[in-house]
Image: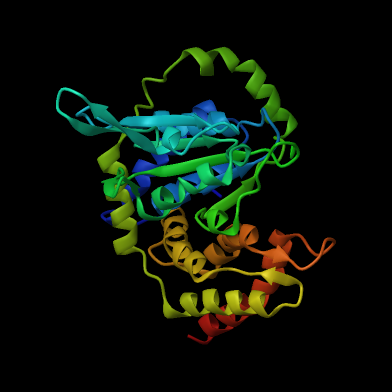
Length: 336
């Protein structure tokens, strides 16, 4: 995926695309050979979703999350960090994530001490290494942008965005994410090894990327990102035919004998702003079948559970079962 330059001058999407291009350039300075993954993360950020990154240690998952956090400035009042990291371990407690109430003897009352979840970009590192009770502490935060403690609801930042990581190959001492938790993630992305030239570039530029903060790539303000999100939502058209294709794809997956657990309605709702974001990044003010073909497998794959081992990979199964609805969408577009 690449950011196109075809949006007409004066279009309200230009500013939004410029903001995302600036974030992308800053992240690319730190993360080499992951252009497609960076684009998916940017789409999720604009779509108000969350991302689960999966691969072996040292593949760049944490570096990507930190680079994104560094690309967006915190509010100027200084009350909120732009980026925080939680290293999930078996002995972690829910209060280590959300915060806790501390008794103040002078006032004779409890004060709420916010946890690391009160940030703009949250890195939930090795999320499958903590207990289900701690994992569940993120459900309300990811779904509703709030935390409820002692019957008091505390709102999170409007930009609140979770990048979680997990290593699928080391399963000792892990707690697989339940379906409800997986359903909170817009995308689950498996980070494949980067190619030879990209890996050589990582080695050649290690000092510059470690020591330099490029002056020509300043961080983007939080309000700029929120305005970009609103502009894309308001100005990228989604035809009813796109909605029908989404629903028909979900129905095809649910009806397939190889599938035990299929896509939720929530996943279809979450996919619409993601499709709008991709369309905007490619210089269009409407969602096309190209956006569906590219993004929908990433939305659906981690929500598909096969009946038995040896069935098709969820990503491939999603692509196979969406082919019919996509073909009908294409023929319907041609008739117009």
